[in-house]
Image (cartoon, rainbow, N blue to C red; front, side, top):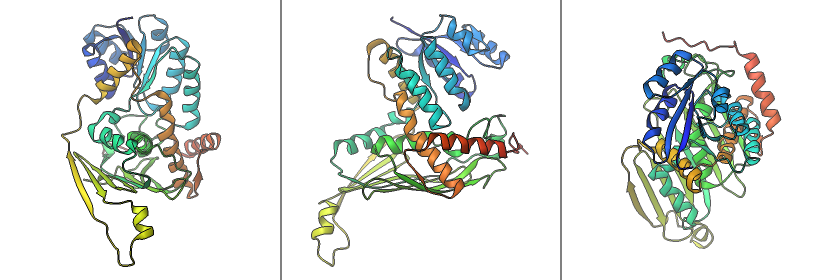
Length: 376
């Protein structure tokens, strides 16, 4: 194989963006498009000169594609991925992999049975220079043990009209959650990927419709407890403006501060642990040296980088930047935060996948069945 023929399922905002660039990637080709809205599928298929399908199953069976790029509403990700594996088709899935840990595990287990097929996720923020540099620093060990992780990510402002723009948005049945599942999958993935730490216990406060007339959560504050003495905080909202985006990772040898366009590395001259144990009674601060790394705007081609890497993995065996199996880690943290936040009870990890599934089912059954938001 010298060219990977893609079929794109879901032609909304992000799916149509993917379809538009595929022919410009080395070794990539758009071969088909699919959307349940037949007029949309036919229009985009006509514009891009590829066959259009209304149902993904005939597309997978058509032998016209080697890989599928899934960009549908969240609940549809697992069944499409499972059908693709059965059809012998590689899978690149938009975030999140699923709405729940149990559904994600089902997909991951199916993928493991087809090792000849590549399975990747669209976690394009892993390619952003600010996070890749932070990852290198932490993975090298030079910053020492992680003591605290705090992310305030409240610049996800959304209007009521945004939530009214799609019938599946802001519903338990259609989306499976709010800010944690729609806006924050990248942040939750990075929270795990940068530190390689999984919390052992989570407490949280989550509010449904705190700032919008919706049936899912739009305000969250969580406390994460890790093995050892490390702790974490995660705060997010779609109701603040302008909001904040500040990630702090405190370590035994300093502090990493990631803000839009800037990574500050504040190094201590000695180990914080040593200073605690040997410092005199009047020590209140320790000498530090700052190094500030400036970055430009968020990369415009990050999605393309993930897709190009996926193509190269198929054609050349390159390692995936975001393997599909990684999709469960941030999702599990998000599921646990939501469950803890709405029940106001601490949740231990590994998360009880069946208990969360029942919890999500109850939320859907208690909701009106469709969101109450209007564009007015």
